[in-house]
Amino acid sequence: MKKLTNAEVLNDLKFPFYAKISLILIGLYVLFSILYITQDFVVPIIFSAMIAILLHPIVNFFVRLKINRVISIILTLLLTFIASGALAVFMFKQLSQLSDSWPLLVDKFTDVLDEFTRWVSRYFDLSPWKVNKWMLNTKSELLNISTADVSQTLFALGNGLMLFLLIPVYVFMILFYKARLIEFIHIVFGKSDQQNISRIISATKSVIQRYLSGLVIESIIIAILNTSALFALGIEYAILLGVIGALLNVIPYVGGLIAVALPMMVALATKSTGMYAFYVLILYYIIQLIDNNIIVPLIVSSKVKINALFSIIVLFAGNALWGILGMFLSIPLLAVAKVIMENITPLKPWGFLLGDVSTTKTSAINPIIKKIKNKIG
Image 1 (tube, rainbow, N blue to C red):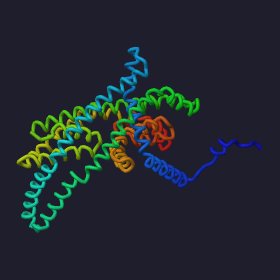
Image 2 (image 1 turned 90 degrees about the vertical axis):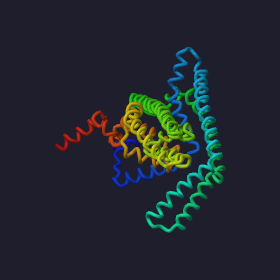
Image 3 (image 1 turned 45 degrees about the horizontal axis):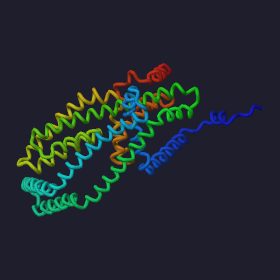
Image 4 (image 1 turned 45 degrees about the vertical axis):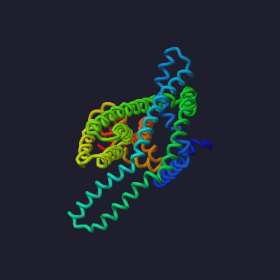
């Protein structure tokens, strides 16, 4: 009697559907629990890997100029550090100016709200003392933002500074050991999968490079448009609000709403009429139309084809898992997962599910769909 090997025994085992689903759910629970617990360690590494992939062409450019690879990496990081540091210093100065005038903005904003709520109380026949009580509570909460939350803000800035100093070290190591890391991935998988692994690595690198470079270009354009619009209206802190709006715009669907709310609040607090807030809304809406119909399709969306449903789902999942950083990382990580699924036969249906409608005709899932149709018909 032939003795079966362990691999043959595993292949012969057939689990019922409910057992497979249970194993998948348990595995996902364990995976996300580990990612949540280790977020202080995992998130910087993921960020570093993405930045390293983005900066890799620049390193290769210096290497082609006959510059030593280590020096090329250091030079690339130095240029990136200078640009990022200049932006951080500028933002910090602008935020410090805003924090100094925050109590005055709160007073003006609450005056506008007071006038509005008095009109609402007259129009809807509400009790004036309830409206005044709500106004006092609102003003107290807004003032507390400028005092009680200072320590929390400084703590967040401290963590950001540590991350800012730690990530370059990771990026340097990833760029320096790039060849060894890729070779390790090839060694882990069998010889029969080498071609597929090379295709996945190449596609992943291309998606991240093109997506992140597209986001950088989009953010610069949106920052210029936002700042120009706010300057044209004479809104205070135009540069700060324009840059913050561009950075928030990186977060799909949610960031744009917050980006327009901030300058509208400043306009209500600093201008004599509330029409300026309406003008801000109109101009930001026009900018969003330009962004969604011209900038994103040409620069960003053409790099990553993911349908809106799963984009929104992973945004909220990323926020629940890692906060704001998770929202930023959710789309590129989902794009990487889609690339991997599209190149692994059992996972191709999931890659098809994540894809955009416009990619259906060219999707790698089409052969599978044709086989199913042939069997049915």
